[in-house]
Length: 165
Image 1 (cartoon, one colour):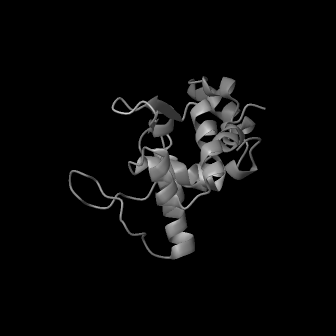
Image 2 (tube, rainbow, N blue to C red):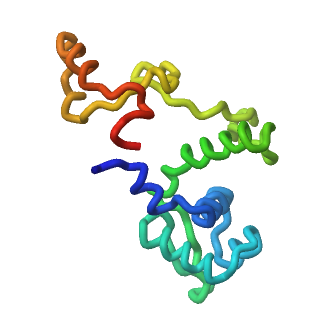
């Protein structure tokens, strides 16, 4: 099966990797900074940084002013994890904390809190679980309205009962 969720979880789906990513999104760049910010054991941090670097989520670059020192930075692949990280944080705030976390994530331009993460349709409607279904990718290309009935018959409803993710 080709499903992105198990593949993503294999790369980043454990606590310390997610905490390293959170620190990287917050500007932490050096091994010692990760250690002091996170309270993680050196060996665990080292192994997770290797894994995140090997998978292309972080880039490892020697510092120009001190070649012995290394800087870790998010690659585009890593930066693309931001919506997932924000969604997990918002879920934790809602179901674990019951209140927004501090510091609050805001829009840098207006200094207003960001809205909750949502799933949006092609026409920007907010979708809930009852609005979703799984279809085979080859069936999706059927743009003909007459074939919409066929798509609906082949769709697995609801989304949580799908074959993937």
